[in-house]
Amino acid sequence: MNTWKIVKTGKVPKIQNPAMIEGLPGIGNVGKVAVDFIIEELKADKIYELQSNHMPNSVFVNEQNLIELPTISVYHKKAGKRDILLAGGDAQPIDEPSTYDFSETVLDIVKSFGGNEIITLGGIGLPAIPKAPKVYCTGTSKEFIEKYAKGTTLNPHLYGIVGPIMGASGIILGLAKRRNINAISLLAETYGHPMYLGIRGAREIVRILNNKFSLGIRISQLDKEIRELEEEAARTTKAALPKVMRGLPKGSEASYIG
Image 1 (tube, rainbow, N blue to C red):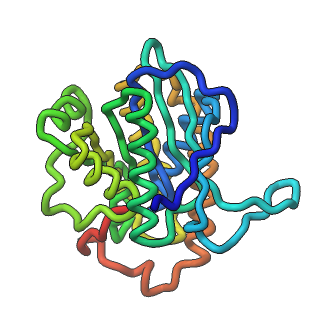
Image 2 (image 1 turned 45 degrees about the vertical axis):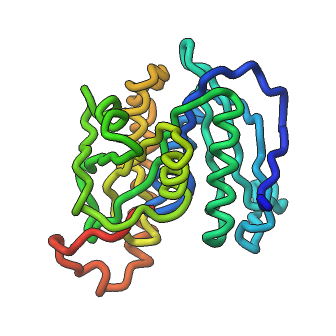
């Protein structure tokens, strides 16, 4: 029995053959930051809320000092003639079974509109902050990976760089392959510390998706906000990091992805 419920939050427009972009919290929150940027810049419309009791057992306090349950939502925007769905939210499902159920739910939504293209986003945790983050990719077939990597800065040679792709960003790929759905994951380098926000890596992902789908996002407008967020994140990270973490050698091995 699927543990996720799809709740309509507004009028669902006519959507045909959409591409789904998923980004949830993970290493450096790269996927979440990238999807949140795109949703905000495109002014995408929220069409679904995915609800489950298999989310973290906590609530958030919002700017109005009121509580909110952690949620995952699906947004829609038409970019030119192409329908784009964006899945983003506050948290990952709490365990393996709920992650599989969530991923099947995402695939069901895509298939309900005749879609056959999914992009998941994540971060590659490094032992030091990368000045110019690289973006790697992997996916369900060589042909689909080549289609995305051609003419971009995407690096398709991921094998041996990192370990397993954790969480929904990985399971969606695996289940998509099982269901013969084209899927790819864009993974940006970031600092692997849990207090670090991988904004620069998220920017690189946004830039690639912006060009791929002709989203019309002016990346230069994001740079000021990114610089401000980076400065704030750097202050928070420096305050929180123990000395032993700050002293890690730059050549240490990369950690897992999420």
